[in-house]
Image (cartoon, rainbow, N blue to C red; front, side, top):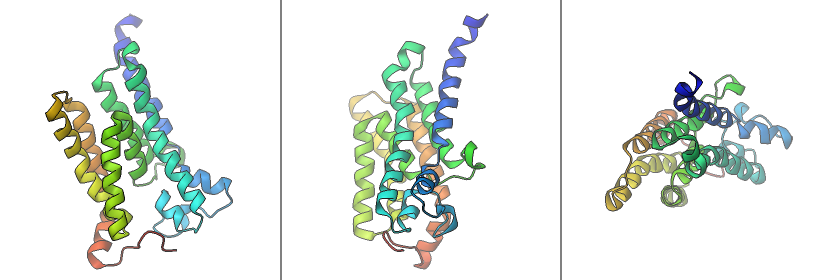
Length: 212
C-alpha cells in the first residue's frame, strides 16, 4: 500500500520542502542580524534586496539578493541533479519551481506577507537551466543600467523569461510544456506583484536604484 503512494508522495514532499525554503525572508533575517531596520517599515515596505538597499547598507542588500536567489536555485537544482533517483521528472521540477517561488511571495514564517520574488525567480531559472538564468539576468542588468528602475527591469525580465525558454527549446527540440508553463505562471505573478510599481512608473513617481 505504501509503495502505491510513493510516486505521489515524493513530488509533494519535494514541493513542500521547496516552499519552506522559499519562505525564508532573507531581507528581514539579514536586516535583523546586521542590526538594520525591518525593510517592511520603510521605502516600498517590500522585503527584498532593492528595498534593503534603500537603508544605505550595500552589503546587506547584496547578501539579501544572493540568499534570496540561492533559496530559489537550491531546491530546483536538487531536483535536476538528484530527482531521477526518486522518480521526480519534469512535472515535479515545475511543481518545485513554483513552490519555491510561492514561498517567497507568501512565506509561512512571516504571516504569508512576502516580497515580489525577483531574486528568487532568477534563482529558480538558474536552477532550471543556467543559460536561461543568465539570459534573464542579463535582461534585468541592461534595463536596470539604462533606466535605473529596478521594477522596470524586473517587468522586462518577467516578459522575456518564458520567451527565452520557449525559443531556446524550439531550437533544440527539448521543451517541456510543464516547465515552460511554470515560467509563464511565475512571470504572471511577478507582473501582478508589481502593480503598484507599474502605476508609479506611469505617474513618474517610481524610485530609482540607489535612492535613499
